[in-house]
Amino acid sequence: MDDVATWKRSVRRDLLAVRAAMADDEVRQAAQALAARALELPELAALMGEGEGGGAGEGVGERGGTVAAYVSVGSEPGTLALLNVLRERGVRVLLPVLLADDDLDWAEYEGAGRLVEAEHAGRIRLLQPSGRRLGPGAVTGAAVVLLPGLAVDRRGVRMGRGGGSYDRALARLADADARPALVAVVYGHEVVDELPHEPHDRPVHAALTPEGVHRFAPG
Image (cartoon, one colour):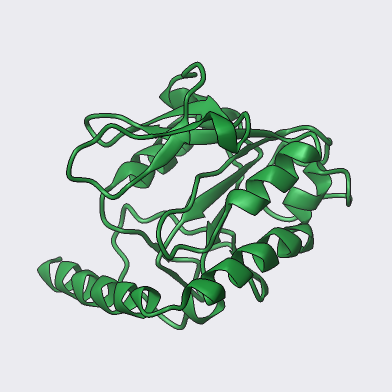
């Protein structure tokens, strides 16, 4: 297990260094492409009334369903344009609110003007919704969960930043027997052959990138 932890730290360091070297224009262009590519994911297209749904996840196929997403930070693949497209198409979007113990509460996305900076000193600058908090269990009502990540491998293993917040959210989904489509949002070059894996890591069903959609076979 110590070897896996060491491997994870090394991979995270390398991935973050590549992101830090990206030009601002490259990050902006990727954000616009990401919003357009969302329609290539049947689970999202169905919620926006653009397709018939299908694939991983349950509760997919009715326009106006719920997506749990997040506001990107720094050089992450930009999600704000995607959030606005979802909301404009009648999709209810939930965004995380980081709690003091690193767990995630949720609140509805009401537009960029209603985002506020999280009050956690010494953390990366996070934007979160200012509206009514719905409780950590709200994520279990989502048909699709968009997950931040640094990379995804061909088995669907996702690597996050190591804070554990989304591990808790994914565990909550499993405990509730909720089966949304789990979609990691990464850059195309961050879909890799193999990543370190631990027993608690829950694989995702797909990766959404500015270049296209990658789907992973169950198991």
